[in-house]
Image (tube, one colour):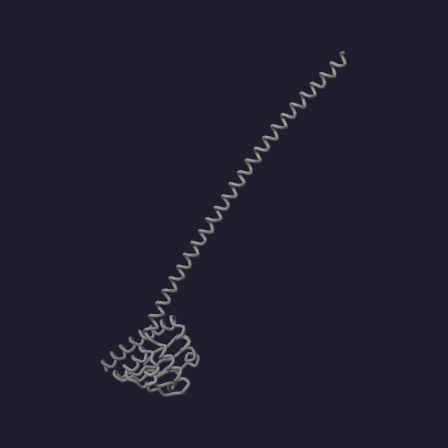
Amino acid sequence: MKRSTLSHSFLNIILVFIESALTLLLRLDPELRKAAYPLAKQGTVVALRLYLPHVEVFATFSTKGVLLDDQLPVGRSEPDVIINAYSIQIINAITTHDSETTEKLQMRGDSVQVQLVKQFIMQLGVGNLVKGLIKKIKGGKDKNNAAETEMADKKDSYKLRIKEQQTQINTLTIKNRELETTVKELQSKQKTLMIITVVAIVVMIGSIIALLMN
């Protein structure tokens, strides 16, 4: 009895790890999510009866992911699909993604759901997890590179604007100096004109006085 309890506990630990891996795969692989969606929509329950070692696992597809347990879900009297296979056959089907290997698995149940389960198994695998991680890391790097490029473009744009504004300021300064020079010249000419006018008036008055005296 003690040995059975230990075996049951060890199985539950393994199922927790596999369930976590499946959750991660579903997050990283959009194609796997597409394959799981129709099964989750129907709430499909798959019974996996393995030999060597001899264990029975139930996989329930839901919107939360793929839930694994060693017992049928509450409210279900039988699974929708039953898979009878050796452990090595399941491992080969998952790692190779080969349709021929998957087709060799003994499955019983509704033909449509059986086909959906096969598609899910072919899409499942550690390779896809690695690809998903690489894609996500690469995507993160691309986003960082894009952000850096955008920041560099903004800096260049700001520098160009500052340079243009500085050029405009220099142009306005030169024009202002030119205007100041023009104003000074006009003021100087005005003063000269006033002096000439005053002198002319004095001369004219003097001439008139001289004529009257004669």
